[in-house]
Image (tube, rainbow, N blue to C red; front, top):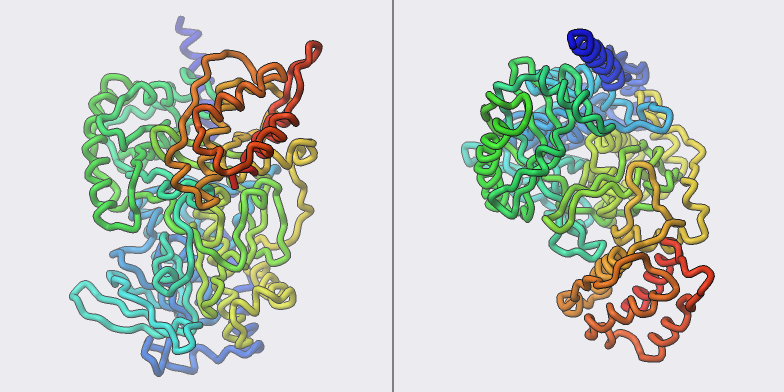
Length: 634
């Protein structure tokens, strides 16, 4: 028995050491790229005035070169990039400290973006922070200190906090932002003038107020009013961390469960058994981050139905989550190994809101861009995170649609259609809601934000609008050269779509994936040659039809959709496929108004005929029939 226990302890130590190494890959000291040392000279040669030869105070007479609204990590990256490139920069925010989601929201797990060879693809200023803070799990205090030190080191950078945004001022031609009106904590209002504006706020408030068009949540896939769940991170004390490591590494042996001396993922089975008091709350497997003071930060509490654009809705959601968290900790003491003496020590000041607005920019990045690993001629960085869609409600669980190798970030995704001197960086940039499942990650946003700072210098030097820059290969090549010298990863790569793209039924699967009803998981396994059960087929029909109707402007018909539960077991085959469609049609007769009887009969007659020798129909072929049916509903 003692020998067995000793072996387990040795195994725990070895596994922990390996995971620590994996977690801290690329972490360590950071060497400032030499490109920054010559940046001011580069831009002055290009046409930017000497920043030290002029007074700047944000007045109409002496405007800032760049004003960055929002001090989330993306805003910090944009401001640092602009200042390091020789621009007088104002970073301004409504919060009382910098760091946004990482610091105020206490989300101190950094989601990393690696390619297939485990190379970091979000380099530059993101990598600088990552290495200075010590890796992908950091102490909140240290993270804030690192951000503050990075900002304080820039002579051309001014930081102003505790300012509420009232509205931006637009010029007479309605093509440019001239200033922003703000209110300080004492109630005093003033205008800050700038030549260029970068909106780095989570919800793109500045751009929205300036009239830039957006979609909301999942409306672009036919789910209006639906958003990924928000999260309230909470802190606990009294956790037996070594028991947590034992439980996660040796008891729960799933590949998704991991632990180090600083972080752990897991407890899925224990948490799945907990029944929240509120239907608006769920718990998923925890991300746990251990702080130096002994507190453990918990990211796993999901809140549904938050109208993130409404401050009262956010406030109500926080109180609801707090109440449920105290109830949950009682369950945890009795059921979660290592939590027997746990108690709540505090909550993040701000919700982790995953999704609100999605800009309609010069280009909207799609789910195909991400999962086909596409390069773009106007690339200014890369992403590589899985397409991770968190739960929307009790009936829409979290899904991973697929995992890219890496994909390029087009400059055009930051550029509004009609406002010449404004860029939008971060999760509300111009991504479709499914592509946003990957591109919303902070590291991706910081890569784009660094490019925004360099592009601002180019715009001021050449007197070219961002729309003009976004149309010029020559302009983007120059900006990429600057970014490469400053540590960013911008070189082209040989884009290779996944193997599944060569499948004969891939086009049909693509159509359904664009609606968010097809999932490939972390392995991009869409099982196109496998069978599909009758109930799963009916589920796809229902969800595909619902979303297609909403997108086609038939919301009244979508509201009448009936979810069909099959009484028949087994897979869809040539013997029963017609009856399955007929059954769906029988329970949803209101859809008959969208197509003629002749069209429907033609569709039915083109389905596979009864085949005594081989009645099997693959998923891929079934996806084609579903896509053909949905086409009749548009």
